[in-house]
Length: 296
Image (tube, rainbow, N blue to C red; front, side):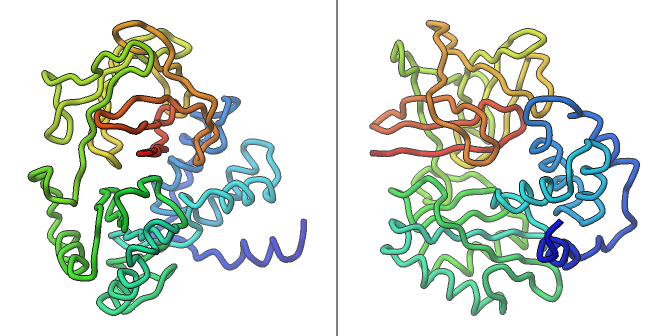
């Protein structure tokens, strides 16, 4: 093992609470031997711990027979994973070209001023972590900021204080669509062009997106939130977390798969046409929140 790799791993901060070895063993066992199991394992561990502790990486390597270098490589390759404890609230600002030319750098500066931290840092009270990324896949709606998993479009300096106060108060109310904090999508099948919206089943306060999902143990209906950035779903099929599935149109039963891989986990993406123009891509792996917008 390279010395610099060992050094980097040793820099990982230890968990502030007692290490839950039993809980992590259950997570590791759930994905043992499954395709994409390592990524799914790390993703659930991060949800469980809030980040990826050093002990967790060592346990994953030992229990799966993988080398620690390989586990560490995956944990550091995907920007979704964090080797450091994050604050209670995670703020991510896109600095991609489209967002940058619309003033994203000034938005970052304002977050730094109000929070007293820079990108990659966590406030002393562990309330906030500030991060920047190169692209969030919603270029036409920039500058884009994600607060606790909720996407906010067209963010300017004056909106920064509102986003911080909303995170502290827990205000996640989905109000009028004209409020740039949210943007639900209306989608249709790219094969038969029929609407995939299900007004009778609402998620996040809006009509859900209805698809057929097929896995190793059968198939059934899957409903996705139409609010861009939300990971909320309702699944009637028996699909395991981390399992790569096939998504089909509920009308023509044609596959929605395209030749594009999820940047978070490498699984195939499913495509849906957005009313008004553009394509929405969602990851076909159960539990992965990978998604992209191509608004053309």
